Length: 501
Picture 1 (spheres, rainbow, N blue to C red):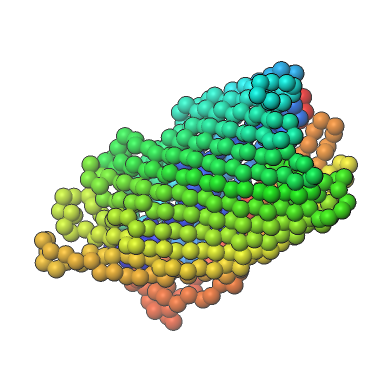
Picture 2: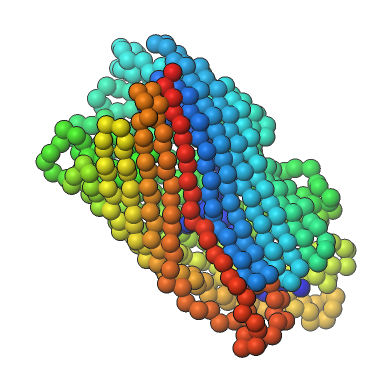
């Protein structure tokens, strides 16, 4: 039977996977209910008007082998985009494939296995207007509209529009919908349990940005999204997930160029040799997670109103075109006050009385990071090197309250015993490095290599029952034979070839 400490992990793992965390930006959340494609309007400001882009990516998220216990998570992606533009409009195509792989062995018991996979394949047609400048109604001086229509585990669509009022402000609006399917296979003591999570996602994004005057630029934005799904039962198992999310943020720039998604740190205006450039950014993200899981029509898991929130504040100072310093604070919070429970082995009518049942009580956990770093930019005619590195200090507070059902007079009377579990990070510090290398192989060919490397350290030795995979029944630590342990992860890379047409 799964121990109390293992059951806590079932709730906490879902909570932590629903948002990026510190140096380890695990993409499970984005693939769980779908990542957004980059904005066509913003990308067309970076790429040549007519171009072909081929991109490969790989993320070694986390790998740990400790005796019989195994955690192994990785992501691979490939995408192709071609755009042809004339003076009035553009037309293009996009094809993508993302695959997230999850493997676990002997994590909760001596004989459990879990394998999961998210395979997202997409094909889409791109249409839109070239950015038009002129005199339009209500003082509008520029306008652009784009759309993508295709298939991604179902119908997928993306609509965007940008409206500008000269040197006053621009408004950028975007809406998208798509489908994602997440499949996990769990095996415990030879019994296999398939879990299928279908999602249909709707998202809307809005941004208002002031056009620079006296080197100032202000941008504010917000996002609203909803993901939910209810699929056909598979071998009796049915899952009904729902995630509601929103975010809002703002950014104030002084003396800086317009930022794009490939830049690691802000860049000072070439024409500005006076005061340092400055950027102040603040972002708040929030998600509410609900999940119901059924077997043969009986609900055996309910995750009710799990609240996830992330706050980021960052200050960049750019005294030189070639160098910048920055620092900030990041907080991730998991809060639960709903009515949640989990039945272990709820697969016969008698298990309504006999199964282990856990309830997640009121819980509030915070993980925080303070960080400071530097960015260096080297620009030459044929190449460009952009590297940012930062040092992080991690802190954690809060407890998880778990209640386990105990028999008083079987099968009629029960009570619940509460266990408070302190949250304790195994590492206290991390170093993160983000390098980007751009090579201009020819007038019309660019090769971009970028990535991230994270190094956590400052771990404390944990005393306990010998870790997962023993079920609590192994020999004492003093007599247990030492087993080799290997850990790696926190590394991702992306290679992109761009050809101007």
